[in-house]
Length: 292
Length: 328
Image (cartoon, rainbow over the protein chains, first blue to last red):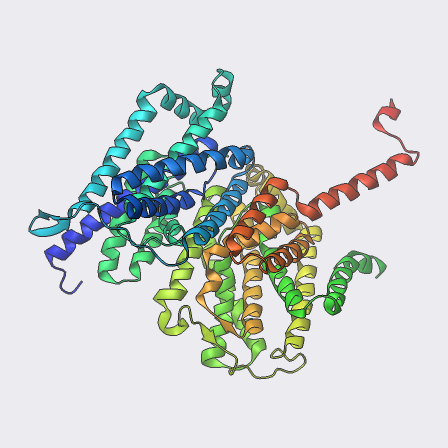
């Protein structure tokens, strides 16, 4: 706070925005799963870590980050499909707590498997886009801009998918009233699978684009858990728009908070969350969906 | 007097049985089971009797543990006082945190608790690192004086002490769940909160009070843990263990009196046995959680209670008595 110059501020804001991008991609899955299936899917953090590890493996094998990105998403698609069909679908009709512990179990198992396959040492992933862009006289890595752009594209793509396509409309209808959708003859169990896979692939994408920022380590899913929760809680469970807004808030709070006092990066979002929940106990945009 | 004995014998028998296993099973394992079951008791009460699932139990465990640890490291040498300080610290913190947490409905309560757990971990690991020494923790072995009555510095002493505390906790919870009006209102909150509010009860107060009681029990377990291990570090609040208390409650049967005991015994036993064969404990615990969750809602003790209830009904039916159909 003593000598906060312009360059530091701008780079912190851009860093915060790119973190927002990662948080958004990770939590949009959580939010969608809660909205439709009424589960809190903690195994999203496993897909996030798995995505990061797949991109590390494929990048170090082939040298192409983009190939790794596609490979990671495909791999997670398969894993998510198996997990959903084998395990997760069994708890959709039970209280939220069941899904939470169950998916936490899947997550723990995943962390154990990752440790088994890739070992404990953190792995580096090189940034695929080198170079810097000048913003108001401050050099900002181009990759961060790319992450922000990607998150924006995904946001609009998800909105388009939910609002303009038949499948998306069915999912939205399912969010409103799953029973009625079933009565209309729509295969709701298939909708659940599609939503779960979509969420997981987006989580994997979050892991992929986050990998060059941090070292890829088995515990990375656990480290980001708190921030993801805060984003979900502040935005309101089940709301895409709320998730986006709160991802923006949390990203800025984290990066600007770290600028003031390093431990504030972890504490400040929690304080923001408490304040927002005291004013509005269902989060910013989560009013309608909080029955049950 | 006879009635009094009847209602309490179950607890005495259960713990005497467990205590007598000392010759067969290692004492360290039994001590851990007992301390963990105290810890899980609060969680089980919250789930089974109040319908609130707390994923942040390690945080409340940690406040008790650090209360005791900090007292021993910086102020005094008496383990009894340390446990008392731990319980008081966790009581005060639970009263404050409860004011905020209890307002939330169940999904948010669960998520907020877990977020709170992560923040507590950061608090002890990073923000207060000057005083708590983060991951290295507070080493207390040279700071603890032998205590009168039961010497808590010896393994034998702590073993006995943990059992005595557990029996006291069980008496308390038996009274709370089976005898008191408060326990009944807690169940009402779980079943139909709105109706209770309509009847003129302040559900916020009920939930807050239950939250404080349950999590102070966790704090007590944390304080005993500190004395037992002679140290406390930030890992006690680690989010990795967040689901263990919940899983144990579910395994034993949430809201039942002996559920946490049976659950801890099985869970810790399985974990100990299997960790000798598999080096990555996460896989195993994860698998265990999945199995427990898919197996059912009632848990072991819950299912047993249902079975006993059925037997009783059968017996009473076999006696000549007026039944509904017979009345016509």
